[in-house]
Image (tube, rainbow, N blue to C red; front, side, top):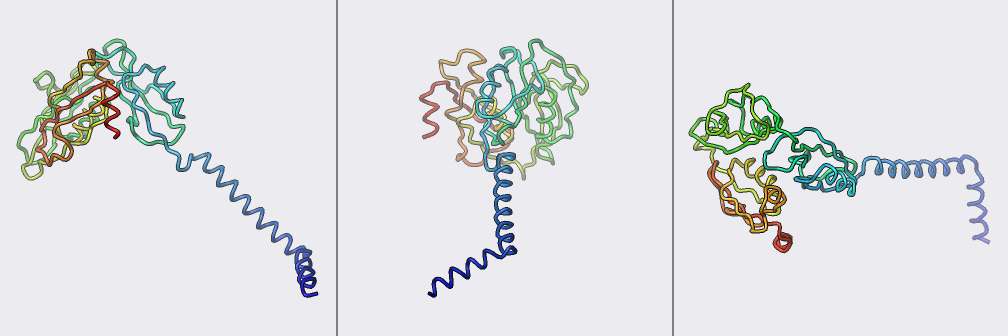
Length: 270
């Protein structure tokens, strides 16, 4: 009898049009929120990031194929001329290989031009080393060696050199040329560390070493690496000094050992 009264009470509540409409409104709002969240996740690829491949030395078609396989796009944003590199191959990219990006991101490629082109040498004196490095890259020029001399401001560019001679801003120079920078070094601010570049390809390793105010020392290629293109695909499997080797004076060198052997590369992930 008591249970029958309870059932009648529930039926009475649900038969009330205000209560029914309120319940339907709550259900509708909850459903709307769920659908909106699903659409938002699809539209923004929420929590879904992809590791950018290193497209260095690939042709544009190879880079596009490999990018599309993982949900990315590529486009040619610029070209430089590198004498020893195969024509049309990817020389650099942004974002860099190893970066994490959302699915659907477009990667800008800098490819090797079929013929050498000339660019205008910028004025780098007074820039910080990192600013000068970025400016060189934007002009299709490469950072060569960092030459440190005593100065009040560490990493302040004092001179810009090409083939060991000072090069004036405005000079026309072949794209892909190496520009050495003479930079300041304050004795109270002159220490840095070797980055861990094991597992990186040669150009990415070079970039990381420069970013830490260091130079590349001896480069040791395995016997199977015979061409410049091979060297671009080679991976660093050993370095000296290592990241754990303590602090270094800026301008010191880091020696690299590179390989294309799968067995040595696999060892790096263990």
